[in-house]
Length: 428
Image 1 (cartoon, rainbow, N blue to C red):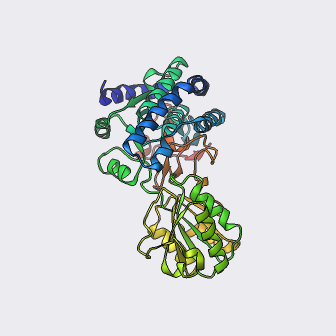
Image 2: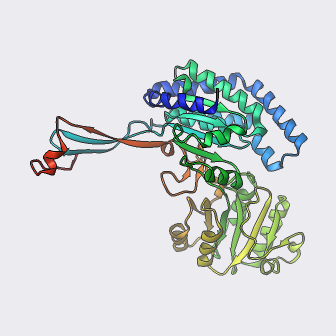
Image 3: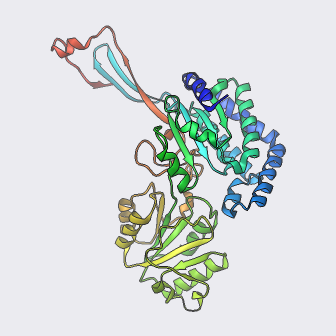
């Protein structure tokens, strides 16, 4: 069956999927959870095949970290499934209930988007998260993972598909594409696919955006910043966490902006700690001059070298004169993903929160909190840096749209156009 065939059938299944009960969808999620635990040894074995192949083909370390699926990642997705089951049903929420006239009532109600194509690279746990979010939200999904995780994705999909089918959901609610050629085919299916969500590198996401007429929700870069204000303490642990806790993640800090009035002692302690953790420091000459002995092995860069998403144990650092320069730098060089200020100055916190134009704006905490699971969404299908429909970690709400339902009792527009009747427009 071609991708077009799958999408055509899925388009017909989508309304039935959207009409399933919350109970049936939660039962399907529980079935997935049980099946993943029951088949975990088989899943790990297939993942080892992908990891062995990655070693043979010289896949980058950052990518290998993402494609690994072990007990830790299994535990996270199982916890996410449990959290999803506990979340309120997103379908059928009434956001407008208005009497247009006596016997003429307008209701705006949430409903699933329909058919979602999700294309992701080297993240087998993403397959579980995406499939489960689509099921909970009543959406159908076409899933296309990266070639690096072919074996892992295949067994995960088969386990999930069998579980949801046995649980009674429409058989066509999930489909998998495997070959690279199928991506280009999927991009042409604007008649059947309602939304595309790409997860991967800047180049990959940009390719998707430039080669389809289907709406695309996602982000291309993860150039996240931390600004260290002159009035701060407890900053070093936060910076280290934001860089090394998972350096390959899109919400890891890539640029550190430091107020020029911070003490030389702070700078030296920071550099010492970062180097002890294995972080490669790239800094401007002005900042390096303040490091003393800790300047050893620090790479000099210029003010024009701050558009890099390292996705590794590397960090760009520069001085800024004040919070205004920090904000301007972030808005110019950032990717509107997640940025944080470290300060004791409440006025500066509010200024930073107001003026930084990013999906996530934080104060006195790590950028790594930008995550659907940590937000209590159960999981996420990705991060959106756009401003239309969904922004930040995209959970259940980001996979919903709405429809207007008008309940009448024989009314015609001509009655109102000619003045025989008047609208009341009264919210109920």
